[in-house]
Length: 84
Image (cartoon, rainbow, N blue to C red; front, side):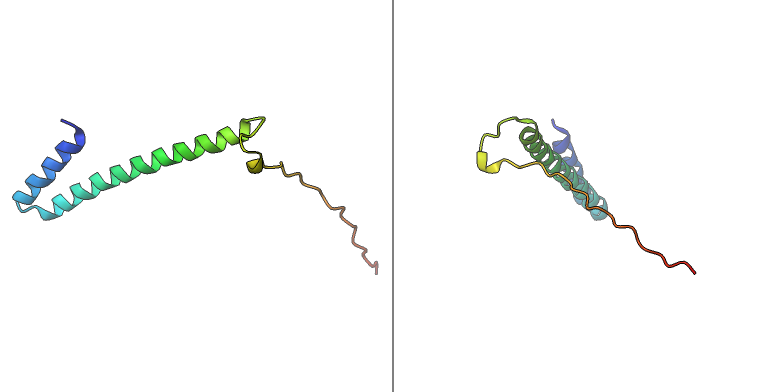
């Protein structure tokens, strides 16, 4: 029996016992775990895609190639100060 199944059985027993607040907390925990798992999986998918596009020498789709940005520093002019 999976952990999720056991949590659901616990929640149902809490309902039967009239412990509605406990049942709601159990439900919230189950939903939270499911949501966390989905977010973690999606983040891994996105990270793999980004990482693969960054390290590849030749992108599979030339239109998706990103030119590296280079910073060009503008010369800074000295301020003139009037001496008193």
